Length: 375
Image 1: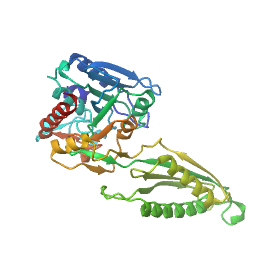
Image 2 (image 1 turned 90 degrees about the vertical axis):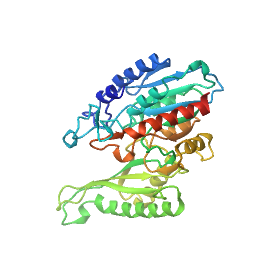
Image 3 (image 1 turned 180 degrees about the vertical axis):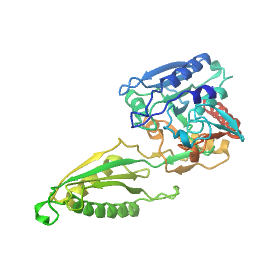
Image 4 (image 1 turned 30 degrees about the vertical axis):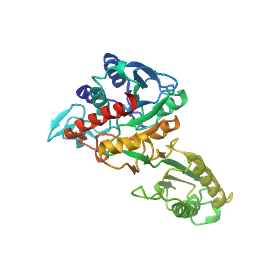
């Protein structure tokens, strides 16, 4: 299973030249799961019909289900072939590791889960076991959004197998990326009255955004994070075309990573109000979201799932800065944790690998979670 998953490209990207369908991976998973006795549904995405989610169930469903879901995304990021020492699409064993694109983040997760559940007798289950495989987590989040729009069976607990080094994660920050565009008027630089300099107005915008960042970091703090405050990064700016022309247009891109408890739409509305007050109708401006954004995730440490995972992994759950599909599952009413055998340091890197020593312990945790919540 590992060999076939790694050999099947499934990159997703906002750049069309790198983006491919995940259907071949979904079809592999569907075939295996049906052989293992799962009831399988393949769900094409409305936004991208050539891509699909998969939802599979082992055991009987009921309206009062408190079953357990093992979830993950089937896509990988693109890769830099010239930086790899191994074939990204050939599972290679070396140095106690499996190398290949998707070994850590995170296609290998599905093979690990299926192999761990190989001998489960569905007639003995008191609650069903679900497997969710999504599309486009690495780019648009269309798979997770489709799941929320469509709804999901009554599932109480969910484990997303993103790379966490076998340490449970119960919380992570969110993300929004926004574009601020100012449109002034160009003119000859020898006479400022001939134009309206967009770059000078952007200077005022940047000053106020940095002030806003300070205010947010004074108001919000969560010590469970390595960086305990929300971060705001000035990531891209472009304006003007020549030193002797007044800058007619200027665009700034920012990245904001909110903590749990901070609402994405409220942050966007606050930013819009600040732009209005700072620019005071002195120049045309627009605020555009570059991505829909992902909310922060938080599952209480008192959740039975968090406590059981901590006991089985012999490690306390913690919070991380990277985003996952966890908030979407939380939105559907599930207690969700992030727990996988890979390492986040391997994600999106050349020569991505999964340590062989992580596979057996991960499978034991999977089986023990099923015993706790499904038998």
